[in-house]
Structures are given as C-alpha cells and as structure tokens.
Amino acid sequence: MLPITPFTETAGTFVNIEGRAQSFHATVNPLADARPGWKVLRVLGSLLGIRGTEFDTIDEVRKACLGGKDVAKLLSNEIGSVPTASPAVGGIQRIADVPIYFADPLVRRSGPLQKTREARAPRALMNSKLMRELGLTAGQPVKVKQGSGEATLACALDDKLPDGCVRVAAGHASTAALGAMFGGLSVEKAPAEQAA
Image 1 (cartoon, one colour):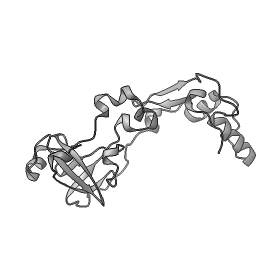
Image 2 (cartoon, helix red, strand yellow):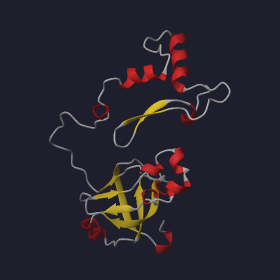
Image 3 (cartoon, helix red, strand yellow):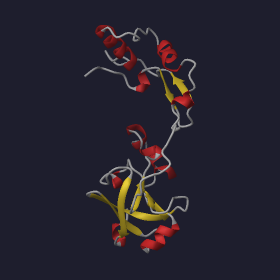
Image 4 (cartoon, rainbow, N blue to C red):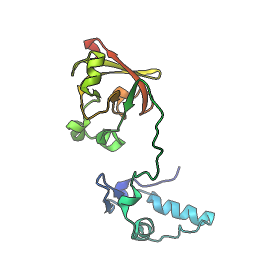
C-alpha cells in the first residue's frame, strides 16, 4: 500500500462532462507521509529508470499530458471505418448507461445529489411499440431478466429508443444483479408489490 492523498490534498486536472479540462489545487495539506499520486509515480519511475517521469511540479505533469492537445479530440468516440453490414440480433436488447450520480463513491454518498431527478431509481424504458407487444403500460412493474440475474423495475415510456430495446441503467443496487450493460434480456409483467 502506498500512501496516496485523496483529491482534496493534491493539485490536478480533470475533464468535466462537457469535455473541458479543469485544474484544481489542494484544499488542505497532505496527512502524515501521504503524497499526491503523481509524486509517488515519479519516485517509482525514477527507481525503475523509466524515462519521462522526471517531473518536479504538477504544472510539468499537466503540460506533458495536455500541453497543446485538443482534449475533445482525445476523448472522441468517433469511429473511423465501420463495416456496413451488422450481424442480425434477435430478441430484446439492453441499452445501459451509468447515471451521473451513480458513477463514483463520492456522488453515491452525497445526500443532496441522491435527491435529484438524475439519481432516481432505474426504470425499464422502452418505446410504445415494444410496450404494446409486451402488453405493458407505463408505471407498471416489470421483471427484467438478463443472464442469471433479474431486477423488478417500473416500466416507463421513451419513444426515442429503437425498436426491440430496453434502457436499464447500471451502477445502482436495484440493477446490480443483471449481466452486461448490453446484450439480450427478457421483460415480463411482475406483481405490483415487487415494483422498485
């Protein structure tokens, strides 16, 4: 175990959800022998003879990582060439995201953030065509099964979703038993008392 400081005790840079790099400074001094992560890595790099780790300040680290680079391009999900034919996929497919306030231990433990609309419990979102096919209505409890896991969620309408897809958020206790964030799943009516 190496005594690395938390973000409150170090300077650094993060990229926000808009794709902008934002730098910050330590708000308090490191406790005892703890050191910022970049300093620990610098010492390890020096001990192992790794070139490019000889930084003396956080500004040197920032310059080496981001100096003159377009952060938006570094984070781009743009795909170069993609085959035009996709394999046929049958059944209902899961589309998942990790909502912003489920993403890390800090936001998950923030009482005020957990009271926001973005932190509400996941629902099984689907378009009206799929709802009709399954005989479901918005607000009705459904049992979602994926792999060996299952979750009982409220059904919700989202006509922006493609046919044959259900959006179920990941990163929440109510959906933790489900499998991968993408792939086949089944949806069926659930008794009302089981709704999350």
